[in-house]
Image (cartoon, rainbow, N blue to C red; front, side, top):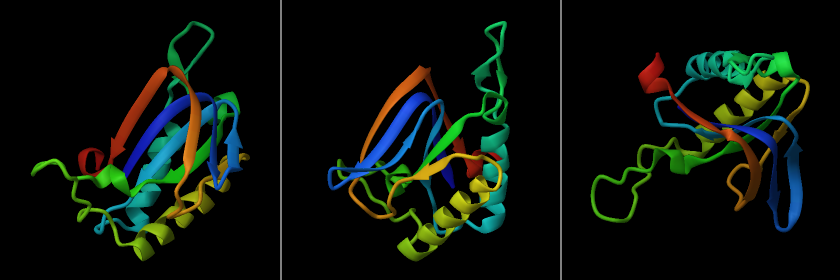
Amino acid sequence: MKFLIQRVKQASVSTEAQTIGKIGKGFLVFIGVSQEDTQEIADKMIRKLLGMRIFEDENGKTNLSLADVSGQLLLISQFTLYADCKKGNRPSFIKAGNPELAENLYEYIVSECKKKIPIVQTGSFGANMEVTLLNDGPFTIILDSSEIF
């Protein structure tokens, strides 16, 4: 499982020219699911995500979590995080989870995050979406379950 986390001042997602998710200060998180991923892996990733202290405190140190700053979440499924570009110029996505598994785990992640963070917005699984953001920093982190667990 991969989470691409961007600390944002604001972010939104739209499909078919209609905004379907919008947040203020918080994390825009692109979520990639592989065929080997499980709810147990998702739980570990969620704990890591929500515990990350990457907001600045009164001394300018990155020492505050999402909850500490009343931050919001925008969660977007993105299978292209599992692009394999080793051969040729056309990426392969065979490492990405099948759509049924990926959608189930994405919805699980959303529901678990909603239990802990008051404002959680989402994209639309499998849809062509337009994402806008105002990156704060910029500050971008990649969490890869194969590297941290």
